Length: 154
Image (cartoon, rainbow, N blue to C red; front, side):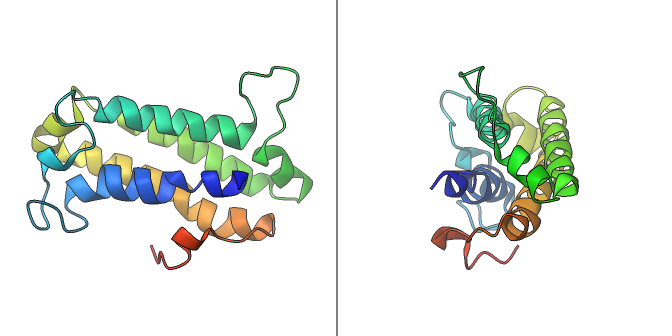
């Protein structure tokens, strides 16, 4: 169940919060960028929500939460299973995802109009992490994909 929670990054964050408003999937505007399809159109908190989701993923992945005496996370399990390269790739991907999101000025809605390339870069960087999660992470730790991700081919 804990590893399944990591997959929020795939379906909800990458697909719903970024790909949908970008028009990578059919949205209210068809298949084009659609600022009104962001998660938080009225409060304009979509970007902050995405950053919070990434921070939560990183805490779960690294075990660096509120209990300072126990920081065992999936990164430690990867090292034990000779998956340091996977751990490093995922941490680098998280760092690059955060940097891409930090490069967006203002709200996600406005960025879809004025800086669509930055939103696309953010999606691509998050996808780098989710690709590692769905393939190398799962294989190295001998885990099963959650049912919700079993048919996701990207």
